[in-house]
Amino acid sequence: MKTNKDYFALEAGQPLQKHLSTTSGRCVQDLSGRNWKMEKMRIGQGVAEGIHLLKSELSGNNFSWNAASVPGDVYTDLYLAGELEDPYFGRNMHKAKWVQEYEWWYNRAFNVEEDMIGKDIQLVFEGVDYSCEVWLNGTYLGTHEGMYSSFSFTVTDHLIYSHPHVPVNLLTVKLDPPPKNQQNFAGMKHNFAGDYLTGLIPFGIWQSVKLIGTQKSVIENYRCEYDIHNNLATAHFDINIRNLQQEELNGELQIQLADQDLTHTCKQSVCLSSGDSTISCSFDIEDPKLWWPYDLGEPFLYNLTIQLTVNETILDSIHDKTGIRTVTMQMNPGFTSEESQIPWTFTINGKTMFLRSACWGGQPSFFYGRNSSQKYRMFLENAKEANINNLRIFGWHPAETKEFYDICDELGITVWTNFSFATQEFRTDQSYLDKVTQEIQGSVISRRNHPSNIMWMGGEEVFFY
Image (cartoon, rainbow, N blue to C red; front, side, top):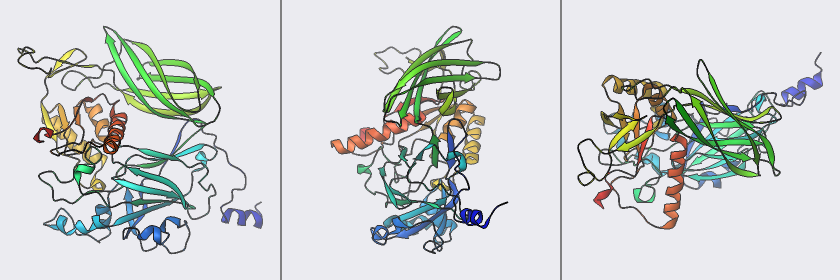
């Protein structure tokens, strides 16, 4: 029987007993959705008034803020709140330009899910356009600039783990006004104007925000490449792992590729120093099922699992899809190297592929908040039905979302990805080049393992200057 003391402990959000996670491996709490709020502030006003110090309480501070969605964008949130007319109608895009003159504050109240408690927790932003500052429960976490690179903070000690009847944690994000001179951010942000847009600059928390809980270490990312020799494929993996402890960590790394019939497994002992390490391993797969563009064969995908264990306890694990394929280039048939200096014929798994290609004209909507997996699938299935086997994302647009590449992997449509440099005279100072390098690396790291992505290119029409 619960006592009055127990009742008041629960009402105050104090668990009756300490709860430690019994879940092995990675736990993910997605903070995306429509439980966000947003408000306009004059530049500098938010910090001056202490908006960053708000707590998740029934104080009324943000009762009048608009509802907001993540992933999304500022314009769509304002449109759904009735503060903007539909930007796609008439000349409403021009009427909405005032939005980009302010900073916009977003917050999200939440309780930590019980399976996360007792783990080492990272707060991960998969993409913010274009720059932001972040606070959690009044504690400043940091800043980030650049649309394409994800970023994260260790928040284990900044979270409140009680579970009162209202959410007790408050995540606060300040979005800076978007930059207007493309020369200062080309390669780091979607080219907002081009020769066919209005100058309305998109910005927002355009990809998901998550809490990721692991134990003692985090599998940050990986790279896979394949060699194919007759009926044998050799898989090469480079896996980046962060040891969150001060001391060395000795464990076992396991990689599995599975289909409905067989599981191919590689195990390797690892010794991880504190901080970041890269572990390389290779193994053979007999009679592999290959990934093909849809007109050359089946775009077969294996279920991929990478996990790190210590004494049979899973510290972290990730799950993905992977396709075994090779991409090489050869000279176009009938041309010599003197006639055509660059080899432009793609060969996939040794077979020549003729690209029936089209330019992907940007995301389904210019406004991130109007996009969805269903929209992506509809457009990509229509492209396949139109007999298109390759899509080129050119420099007027951002490298696409994970959902886009996932669907292309599944459908067998190849992708040619440009970096977002287009028709511009670019800066050459080192500080700018360092930022661009970081964004390009982030873009490649998050998209490099998709079998559909067969080519990277520097930019679009940069020869004008």
